[in-house]
Structures are given as C-alpha cells and as structure tokens.
Image (cartoon, rainbow, N blue to C red; front, side, top):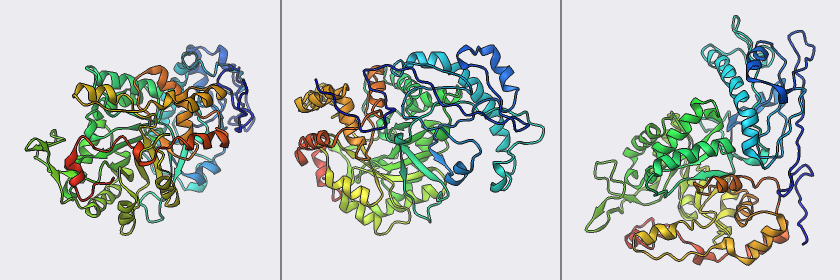
Length: 499
C-alpha cells in the first residue's frame, strides 16, 4: 500500500523501522585548552563514573531544552546544544558510539539512566553552591563560572528533545518575568477524572512513568482532587534527580468555590501545598462560573436544594486582577483561562496588565473550533486541547451515575484509520498530530503505559496537507461539543455561561 511521504527532516525515523543511532560528538577543551577524548560510553561501568567526574573537561557538555531559559545567555554559551529530531531516550558522551533502538525506550533507560543520574547529582551539587553566592557579571559568566575551592564537576549528558516539542509563549514587556523566554511542551499529561479505587497510587505511578518516557508537562486542577498524588509522583522523580523543576511545566486551576478576588491567592497556595511546590508554571481560571463557598475547602461542589449552588455574581475582571497579583508574588509564571469564549477573553484583554497566555478548551477532530483557535493565535494565546481523543472513558464513568453519555469513537473513523495505516501510526497518534501540527498543545489522559508512550511519540512525522484537509472535514461544529454541562442545567442560568 502507498505510504505517505514524510515532509519532516530526512533524519526522521519511521515508526516501523528500528535504526541504530550514532549521536553527534563535541569535544570539550580541557583546562589547558586542548580537546580531550572520553572513554566509550557503551563500555562505561558505574564504578568508573566517579573517576571520570574527577577529570575536568572530558565530557561532552549538553543540555536539555529547559522550560525557561535566557536566550542571550543560551546563545553565548561556550558549548552549543546539539539538536535532536527524535523524542526518545538518547544519551551519549564524547567520542562514543551509542546505539539504542528508537522504539525500545525501556532498553535505552536501562542502559544509560543510572549513569546519567550520577552526573546529575554531581552537577546539581555544584549548581546549589553557585546559587548561594552573588553571580558575576553576565559577560564574564561563560568565561569563568567556577567558585574557587569547589571541585570542577562536568555537566551531565541529559535526555534531549527536539525543538518541535516546545511552543514559545509571548509575554509583554511589562510582565514580571519579561527577561525570560517561556516554552511550554506541546504534549502534556492530563489526569482529570481518574476514579479507580486505587486512583492516587495509579496516578503516582503514571506520573513517574511519564517522566521516564519524556513528559514534562503535567495538567491538574484543585477540583480534580488529585494534586497530592501528582505532587507525590513528581517529587519522587525530583528526589531521584530524574528531572529538574525547571524542566517541568505544571498547570493547575482555580476552582469554582474560589471565584472571588479575596480567595484566589488562598486557593493557589492550597494547590502549591498539595503539589509540594513553590510555584506553578501556569494557573488557569477553570471555568468562568463561580460557586458559593461554604467555608470548607473540601466542599468543591456545594449544593443547595438538591442542585449545584451557583454564585451568579461572579466578576471575571476582578478575578483576573487577582490572578495578575499571583504573578507579582512569584506563585505562578503565567496565567490563563479555561472554558472561556472569545467575548469573555476580549473583556479581559481590554483591561488586563498581564494577558492570558493559554486558553484550555475542548478540542479534537470532531470538535475543532477553528475560529477560536485562529482567535487565540492572532492574540498570541496558546490554545491547549483537553479531550483531544474524545475522552471516551467518560462513558463508563457516567454509566455508574446512571447517566447515558453518547460519544463517537473517532479512532474508529474510516478516514482516520486509513490515514493512520498510510503513516504506520495509530489512530490516536494521527488525531494528536492533527492538533499539534496546528500549534495546539495537547493533554491526552491515560494511565495505560503503552498508550502513555505512543501518545508522546508523534513528533517524528508531519501530516500532508491533503490528509489535514480530510481530517478538517470531520468537524461537527457546535454539535461536536461534549463538555456542554448538559447534566447541570443550572449552570446555563449563570450570566457567564460560556457556551
């Protein structure tokens, strides 16, 4: 059968083919300025790590593209980062030929992961000391960044990701962090609505596995009641030096009971305590609709007369002013919205000091919202798609509540299946790639480890325009919306109901 031609770089590795990959080498000058050779990584034993670490300048210096970096300092760095086109676990030291199966992620981890952690621990020791003293002038940093008396520790080789994994966030000059460039990973992990009996343990294991695979973007919300589990999973990864906090992008959301200016900061601090973090990377207003607060933060959905106790006095402008204050306090790097319509966003843009950087809404092949996506891009707001695969797990969840929910399984759509077969991909991968290729961030939800990996493995190919056009024809328009709050009629009576 005819296979689609890949429009990405010729270095892209097809899904069906397993290649041996030799990574680029970059000799690093030693103390005398003469390039040194490192021993082959393939034969490196854990016992040799300490010995190599004691020798300065003999390890290839590479960095993973971080969530936040100073672009000028990045460009000035004496050791340039090598770009990779493969979202897999590749690791190499100077003068070594490292081979790993692109699809065999477990093998790659077992071969290299322990060695990488040794270097990370040593490097972080140096960084921690450096951060405790005054930094020298920026123009001198790339010439001498060593504290007298501190042993020289080579920078570890870290997992590399392609630039395509990130989207830059545009921020105004007046923004408190305007000296930094912000990059959000295009592929995140959503964890809303996990209701299994061992939900917390399952989420923790899933988060840890996701970090191993390469996920750096994690989405949660106070209302999901799983911030503690996600925080536990991430903390274990941080404690094991699998990832640094700067590499992560963590999103959580303001709940309906906190939709009052005086409660915005309080509830973000509650979320931070749950997550065991000092800040989040994005804080979103979850819905433009508030609920009456009972005074008990555990009552997330208060009821009155047998229905949700909705607060119809919600003031979105006052809420946004309080959200801006969170940036000033350093409790969040960016702020954004979820489930807002364009008219509501216009009102905020008309008065804001810090504009929303992200809009999280339902987006998938059967509910594409092209006008809203265009609206966001024109205003430098990044659209983020929840339920990018349709969130079919809700069918069983609603069934337990006695509610029948009709959802189309677009992964079984003949058009998508035909395209998936042509590219040697799964239907889910094609659906996710369709969104990512339009500069839409996706946060598919799963606790299945196989799907966790396949959902992430969508950056080594491009869909041809003819196939993109075929998928655009599957849009059902407004009738494709499934998160319409139809099961909560009183929500439609709220003056800020977005749909």
